[in-house]
Amino acid sequence: MNTRTEKDFLGDVELPADAPYGIHTARALANFPIPASPPVPASLVAALAQVKKACALANRELGFLAPEKAAAIVYACEKIQASNIAHPPLPALQGGAGTSTNMMLNELIGIDAGAHPIEEVNLHQSTNDVYPTAVKVAAINGLRALAEKVEALQGTFQRLENKFAHIPTLGKTEMVDAVPLTLGAEFGAFAEAFARDRWRTFKCEERLRVVNLGGTAVGTGLTAPRSYIFHVTDKLREVTGIGLSRGENLVDQTANADAFVEVSGIMKACAANLLKICGDLRLLHMNRKIKLPAVQAGSSIMPGKVNPVILESVMQIGIKVQANDFIVTECASRGSLQINEFMPLLASALLESMELLGAACGMLAKHAEGIAADEAECERQFNSSVEIVTAFLPAIGYEKATELAQKFKDRTDPADRTDFKRFLVQELGEALVTRTLSPQNLMALGHR
Image (cartoon, rainbow, N blue to C red; front, side, top):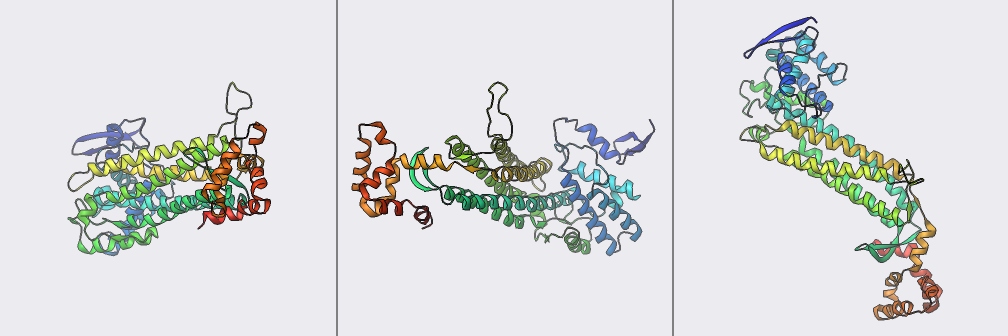
């Protein structure tokens, strides 16, 4: 195999002659042999390429980088962003606060552009400002993609709300029968929860728009000209199309990662809603009020068994996202003094949560489109429950309602205790019962 030798202050390393990276990446690949670790997220690599492009453009416009050299660097960055070249599988769980990833980009770009990885590609930069900035760019892109998926999920449940609006059913509290409402109202509550997820996901982008690019190692901007510090974020805003701004206190922005914790908390809230709603859908299916689409055989031994596998998958994603929130929180809190050493794990967990939630919302939206109501079963359960008497309190009062419920329960013939609604018609008259238990009245109660 043809090789080439590269040197740094630690010594010599032999690389394959056609390796698109250099000695620093080779050392990182050797230092972090973690097969179970996911690679550095592709979205982060693309975002870091955008950051490098913005830095090159700023350096060119300010006269710090020759135009032809800057053009070559920009072109190499654009190829990486478009995934025309593959980066090596550098583990996400790397030490050094992202230095290995930054060096990998410097080398990939430098070798492709014929530029020096440090002196030219990394000019006026430090891992400590370009890496967190890239994480924020990648996260904003992830949030935008997720917001679209949540919006579609909200729309699906709003359509089901309208589809089931005419079906009276019985709510449950403490897992037992409570008071009447419509099946549409139940699905409307799901839709409202997803509407809040959509709003939160959209709004929390603001938490990530302040970046520390230009702050170099600890936020003081040491080794970077003042003109560059004030110009480079403007170029990144042009490159990304995102309304980014330079932090007023770059030392703070470099040292502290609490903004990521806040955004991760929004992801956890979305995960909590997915877990709760999927659990409710399983219960409604088990209680035979709705029918979930059958998507695959559910057992290797029980013929014809079908399980709610999509809901279970979404719920497992929710659990994973909640676990990732803990990781993000821990990483942010473990930073020391002027840097956060655990940014690579934080980035991996945060970006993974966004991708997982997007996949979960897409799966659930598609699955929910096929949900059907069992109207006959809903009607049977509704009519047989004494709890529907609660709807009559405004008309007959608590004492009379209690008396009717007990009278129905005291009937000696079991056949006479299967249709409480018919009993109420006999006691109160059809007009009052029909009006009180109409879907329109039940919905009005739910929207007071």
